[in-house]
Image (tube, rainbow, N blue to C red; front, side):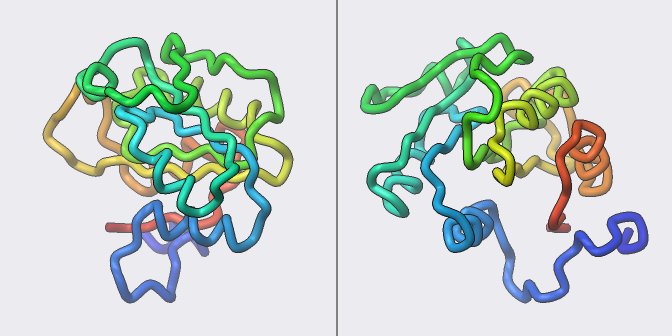
Amino acid sequence: MRKLLNNRIPNDHTNQVNPTYYVDQVFKQKNVKTVLDLGCGDGRSLDQFKMRKSDIVWVGLDILSSPEVDKRARKDKCFVTYDGVNLPFTSNVFDLIYSNQAFEHIQYPRMVLKEVHRILKPGGFFIGSTSHLEPYHSRSFWNFTPYGFSCLIEETGLQTIETLLC
C-alpha cells in the first residue's frame, strides 16, 4: 500500500487524525474566506468554521432530500441544493471545500470531483473523508479504499497531498 500511495501517507501521525486536523492545518497556512461544505447534511460544520473565523462565508450544499438533510432544523446560514452532479457555482469561488463522510453517498463521485476542481480557487484546498468498508447507512453507494479514492481525486485534476489509512 505504501508503494502505491507513495509519499501521500503521513509518517508523523501517532494519533488518530480526522478532517478537523486538516481544517486546522489549512487555516494556519491560508487566509480562508470562503468554505463550501459539500454534503453538509444538518449543517453542523458551520459552528466549527465559525469558531475558527467568525466572518467566514460558509455555504452548505446537499441534495434536496436525505435522512440527514430532512433533519436539518437550522435556518441561520446559506443552504443550497444540487442535482447530485452539477455544483451550482461559478468557477474559482471557494478557498476550501470540505466534505466529511459524504462521497460514499454521491452516486457519480468522479463527476462531482471534477466540479470540485472547477469551483476551487487556484491554490484552494479540498478536504474530503469517506467511509471504508462500511456495511451501509443512509443511501450509501460506494466503499472507497485510500488508494482508490486518491486515484479518483487525481483523475479529476486535483492533487493528493496526504492520505490517511484509518
